[in-house]
Length: 210
Image (cartoon, rainbow, N blue to C red):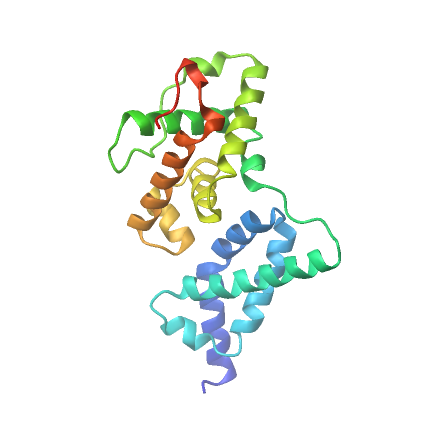
């Protein structure tokens, strides 16, 4: 067993490398950054007894996020038993901004027109809809949020990272502790589900692909 000085150095190495990612993922899960910071600190308390295991692990972030998710689940279970409010729908929160809704919708439409694997890239030009009245955006946000509710939590997280934080599939992979191929698959499945959603039928004068 390493002495205390070595363990402290190993722990600090892990904190420096992964704390930001863990807090970001927990913030997405809880919708509360302060809570995410508290849960992240609990992660490091657990890791502190044997940081060497995580240092030597091939994918330390995956192991750390397993601990983080367990802590989050336990926290929300306790909240539910106490009758406290649960976290809101992150998809709805992410779509509260007009530009984000516009970008996501253009991404959905582009995916239907471009079947290449990297079709999840953001469309650079400004769409005609960007000049639409506020009610257009209000309706779009509602329908996109409802459709996004059909996605898995991991698919929602990938979309959140792509649009809210402007991350590429490669960066999303690093943040989520998965391969780039897995990140691209998550985005692709999310776009396919959104295009098939009845909530998005008829937008822009045409039905989504069935």
